[in-house]
Length: 249
Ligand SMILES: C[S@@+](CC[C@H](N)C(=O)[O-])C[C@H]1O[C@@H](n2cnc3c(N)ncnc32)[C@H](O)[C@@H]1O
Image (cartoon, rainbow, N blue to C red; front, side):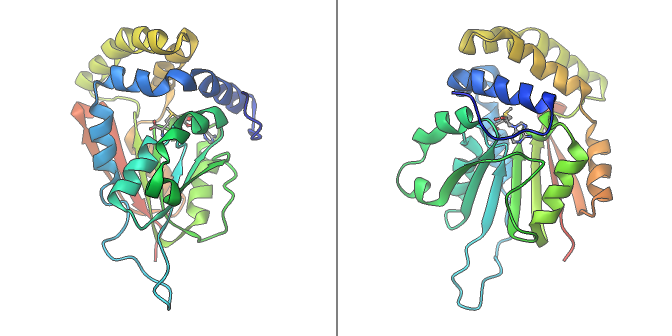
């Protein structure tokens, strides 16, 4: 099945087609390639996604509205539900096949709180100031126009709303560059190809890391879009990073 969600340009179309193609083996490839570390990274990134006490509507009925952006097969959405069972979570992605392949995870209470919704990160289908938190794991690196996608996140988060990004930023230190290069030239293409049959996708992914911003450049971009309290946490010797930021109150 090919996605019908409109993309903003040819790069978006290529990325969307690639994720539709590899969706069937994506989870298997992830587990094998990271040897389960991605589960630990996700767990840590989701912690602190929402404030301890959520502001409530006068009738006290309001639940936190969370967007898991570039949700893929929804592993992060399920982790968000596990840590915040009262939140209403929209799992947004433009590769509809990725969402479809994760649909089996939405059983029982999980399915009541997580709603998959096709969408492009450059054009979020939400009102201004309507979201309490946006989470995005390994997604922002792929977007065609990072400033435009960042502006959309700032627009849709309410004052005080939180942005959490889990990502492979361009490595800058000698050790993390070495780790990335060794891993990306060996484990990633071989295991990715074995799990999905698609070598093209698993040579694109490391290239996209090399071309992406360093964490400090990304933090500066968030500042330019009005985000405050921007901070980062290094994971596994700089293999991945968590970046947190807030919209001013
Ligand atoms: C590497 S996967 C990460 C999936 C998931 N967040 C995870 O951690 O496993 C990147 C996802 O971002 C989605 N994506 C990339 N660019 C997008 C865009 N412009 N709008 C919506 N989704 C996008 C892809 O379709 C893909 O599912």
